[in-house]
Length: 447
Image (tube, rainbow, N blue to C red; front, side):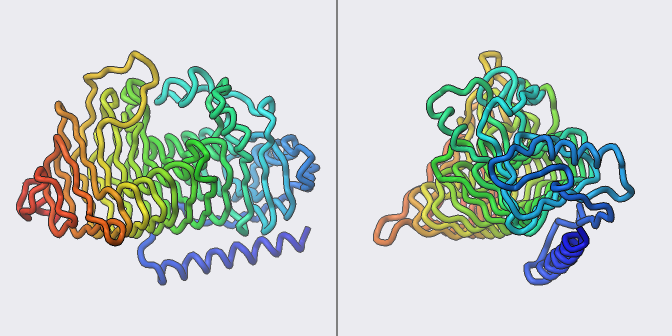
């Protein structure tokens, strides 16, 4: 016991030192909103009968260990140590004031037996499961109403074994919406770092109705053809910091959301104060996305120092009629993209509806979108900006953007409609709706 306790202490101190050094080396960070906590009380999953042979089901061991943390309530919280090994498990709930610590070589592996996955209620801002009406499968790691929760370690792995779920989706045999890998609801003070997430059945990390969340130094992996395996989706959440991570998945790398049509409008909780910084990745869909579920509103988002390779769309802001909500003050800067189908897309015709009861007159408002310092190579379509006829997008400000096509091919033109704003130093030359004047309306102070 003393050996692994000492190992944990040294690794946490090393992580803290590396984090502090990275701030000096890499510049700004928002991670201070949730500092790393050292827990005096430590337990191992082995103490509760955990077996890391990749075959034994460990759901009971995880639940008993977390029950102990929850009910003994040690001062300063408790660390649950997962040593090297492969721990097969069904879903389980986390608790407040705990650290889930995965040692090097530790793998928490999800069971592929759907009968082991409980059902939970749909999110009130979605009104139903995202894929199927009614309930949805519980995430592998789940929590509701928590505070001071840390998921970290020595780059251990949380493996969702999602292929059985992807196949059910492809074969249209899903009875309920697929589970996320991690979903934390109505929680605050969340830190996720130094863990590998792979093969999620659905979205990977989903903080919803949360505040003060830091996700940093994570690796998120899924095959490019895995359906809807978004990397990180902050949803109706505030003060979220996403930094220094690598994401290669089958859908958007990071997508900021806030509820779905009439349900999101009624719930009325926006996402705001989201920072996305130093993300590298690849996907057949979007690198940095807002939407398409934005009915509660998305405001004050900063994404910067982003490196994208083999992308569908580099930067994608997406909404639809029936969504309502406001998308405002979104800033994306210092982006490099290579081999992308589309560089920048801002569109009001993206995404489906939960049911036929959505209000087609609930139109989104999109204004104050600032995109600057973007360089792209092998970008087939530079940009598409399509607002809504009865709710034109305004204040679309583009600056210092160079999106090059394949060598030897002519650069593609921008396509725009129902949009106003301005552009300066943009190549290929932007559409006529975006004048090159530096003094155009809402963009004058930005330039």
